[in-house]
Figure (tube, rainbow, N blue to C red):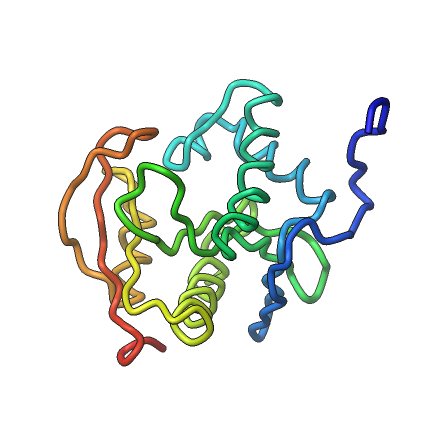
Length: 187
């Protein structure tokens, strides 16, 4: 619609048909308009988003947010927004990601500034992985990690994933592919 106002942060309408998943502390839900601002803030933080694909402008960061919405519509899965049950704040994203150029679907995660070291990434990623196995019927998943991202490598290994190989990611350059245990060995 021409002349429509941009998203405002209070909008809580769903942009996808993503399910609502819960853990003890978290709600995993599809992206909402109010998630655009925290996601763009993360993506424009060159240091924090370096292992995820940082952007130097709001336009490209907004396009990534829209890309995630489109990914849900094309594949039926994508990145969930991680919402803290106790505060309602968005703490990061986790989910199943497989855009053009990826070798296969991966379980990915990012937590925002102030949410690291609290087990949020693992709690959310394990729930997303279980959903992919139980509800989507996946038999395997990977995590694609930029070399040197020791925190993500450590988390993948704590989740039972093992290093399989390096590959050339069309957006990030060399990535390390970690293979997760299949559904018979998950959580």
